[in-house]
Image 1 (cartoon, rainbow, N blue to C red):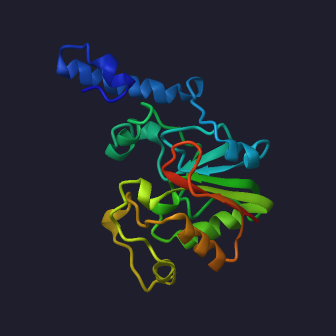
Image 2: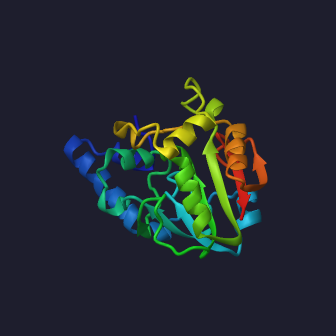
Length: 229
């Protein structure tokens, strides 16, 4: 059955090979012309902190563009990886995902210290084996008075609900090398958290959390943490 608007359009093409070709070409067209069809998710909390600032977004969210002034960074550009199964899966949300401005690892950013107004991430931190390294990198590039704004999946409201929560001790072990990465899970959720777990991590790192919400105001399956540097 059709899963998104492209599938619905292709449904009327009777020959399967032509239908699949249409879907691939249409996705390429949408991605290449993304700036003309950009969809914005309206988050009052995002607007409160990030309006008028210039920053970076790690791993541009597949399901929404928050309308922030951000350079988008990811490990790969979807425009050159249209048939990658992971990225095709992301198009099920809106039939497109955001294009990327800079290809780089999110925990090794090509920016000098204290150079951006904010670092914004949505459903990203859990994909890093070593979240402490990622947070320290985001903190490094953020200006004094700037923000790290994170939307993170909540264990009880996602497919991770049956997994064990990731403890602070485990995160410390990953960071100091006593716990090794399982490479086969690189594109999966390395960590599972509730709001209190990240608050505990921020306290450990001595980060100033100025606001948090147990439920985000867009998808509702995550929680929000706002750190002021």
